Image (cartoon, rainbow, N blue to C red; front, side):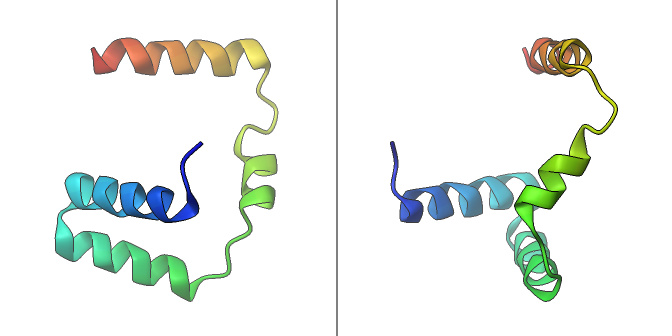
Length: 66
């Protein structure tokens, strides 16, 4: 298991790779401005989706990345 600090560093690195430095900073500032509850987000994320459909979407996404 990695530490919280390592998770934060990897997250920032991923944001910079995906968005570039300026947009990554903008994303972080947007997140900090808004109240965000990860648990509630997860509960609503796949509402009305079966495990099978979520699994199919994940497998399709993985195949698309190859």
